[in-house]
Length: 187
Image 1 (cartoon, rainbow, N blue to C red):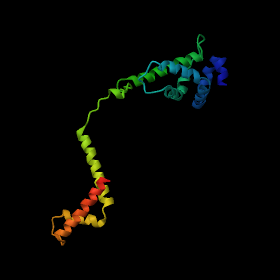
Image 2 (cartoon, rainbow, N blue to C red):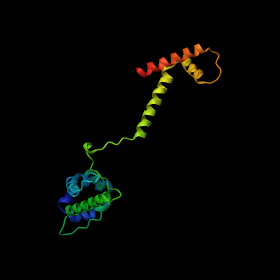
Image 3 (cartoon, rainbow, N blue to C red):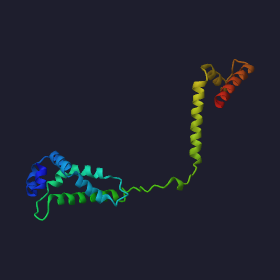
């Protein structure tokens, strides 16, 4: 029905559009005028390279807004509905582009090439990464590689308290633990 009035009688569209539901208007526009709307959008956004939205984004937003916009259509004998929709889409598209081109929302999409990058080393960050890696290795060593008996012997060696073991026995514990640490880090 919409397509028949679209091609033949634009005057009746003025009476039909206010009586249609939002979904009916969206479906009719999507079915009958999709390509014309896409062409108008692509024509409007062609020269704007730094805008982070696409023709699909603008088209979907237009479909959402079009019931309210198209209900304002008034028939004029020197124009037709296609011209009205084309002008509305153009204005809608330019409004969206101006919205995204405002300074506070503009994004510089001109990326530098990798060849032009200058590598600056951050010693504190590198040291922090190495420290974290060392801590992770030590945790892995401590919790996975040592037995419960080894952990007890380490605590015994690190404590300054009196030990019931002889110096020979403590040195033997120390040698076993040192050999396990050397084996872990050399693997």
